Image 1: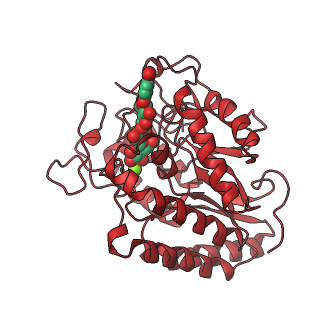
Image 2: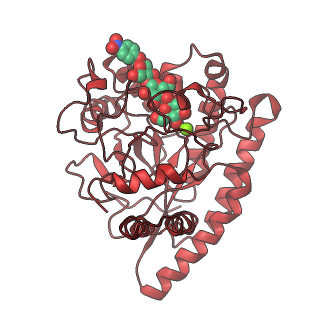
Image 3: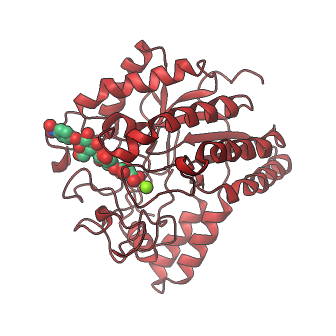
Length: 362
Ligand SMILES: O=[N+]([O-])c1ccc(O[C@@H]2O[C@H](CO)[C@@H](O[C@@H]3O[C@H](CO)[C@@H](O[C@@H]4O[C@H](CO)[C@@H](O)[C@H](O)[C@H]4O)[C@H](O)[C@H]3O)[C@H](O)[C@H]2O)cc1
Ligand SMILES: [Mg+2]
């Protein structure tokens, strides 16, 4: 492959709008009777989100999106960038129940995962003119920092490291710009977690051969923290890194000294409203959340390439059905909007609140 362009990979690119999410939003708006809210909801169609490849069956769809972006680029003369999330490790989401994936380590999981990555790579190879930015495996390495006391996480440690290494090496070979998932300020941002996190990320990066297309880390994926909080949310009490900016400013130099000169992208898709949670660890369908700062390269920090919307607002975090196989107690607590459908499926009431509570307003 060619070497990566220096600097911010988003610079000069038109971000491809996910047709999948656009269809979800169109259907959602159709179900809203209030004219003002309906109009606001429809505006979300034009806001770029990341496309999640959470099952191997979706991998051929990447080729469809890349072909579409390629055609749009050739028709308009613009350069197109497609935002994806790679999210299918075996024993996925090891500290929770809500987003458990299709592959298990015990059942040929590593071979299946390599096949999943290989299928993404095969689609990517067909469209060399379309730029891809990928967030790599939300909730994987972060769980190895704080949850090795959870049996499923300690059991998944090698698979997560080997799987992530395979993914970044294979995607690097086809020029995909990558940001590894790094939890958020309320997870790895606690002072006690910072150095272990920096150690884990930089060790893995160097052991993989410092892949040149690995640009850095993604933070706050599917979480609700402010990038720059006007004042610390009460639940952050005790953590001086009370927002993503503080977390990033503390983490970046430790990564650089570990040989990983990381830049960042920060999810603000559901960060419009602060002060919602009973506890900072509340992550499931937090009630009252609003769409946050619109995606932009005007981030206010040379460490941050872009503010982005990674978790598509309206897609559920997890079911509130206590008898469901993937029921996680975090989706049944006071902070959580109930009743909620299965993770990844459309949560209409939640979406309507995101629209209503959007800050800045839609
Ligand atoms: O003051 N002190 O002295 C002190 C001492 C120790 C402290 O411990 C810290 O407490 C934190 C909670 O405050 C914990 O952070 C939570 O960890 C969970 C995983 O275990 C995360 O859950 C994931 O969230 C994802 C979406 O983000 C979901 O997609 C995914 O399914 C879901 O699993 C939460 O976000 C995240 O907020 C830290 O681990 C923990 O180390 C804290 C303070
Ligand atoms: Mg999840």
